[in-house]
Image (cartoon, rainbow, N blue to C red):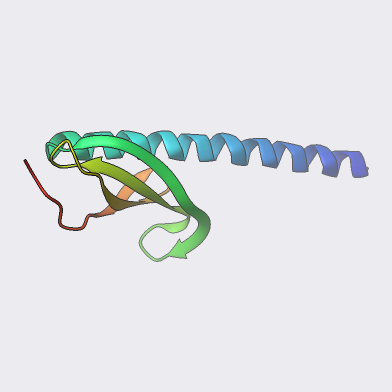
Amino acid sequence: MENIYYLLLLCILCWYFIYLRKVSEAARSHANRYCEQNQLQFITIARRSSRITFTRKHGLVWYSLFDIEFSGDGESNNYATLSLYGLKLDNVDIPPYRVH
């Protein structure tokens, strides 16, 4: 009977890994789209954190934060924070940056 629990745990871990990959791909897509719309050069993205949270608006959902590195002038690099609820973009917090 305990083998079933081990198998269930293994399946949950595999699902978790696959879901986090989906979230990362969605974040990269949102970041690329945001940079294209604002004429920024997208450099890189990195996950800061992911956790399960409950909100009245979204219910029980994975909340993820990503750090985005971009350039506004092609020479310097700047950082922004992108937040996702599930696979949907919630907010992009971008500080002032230099443009060309």
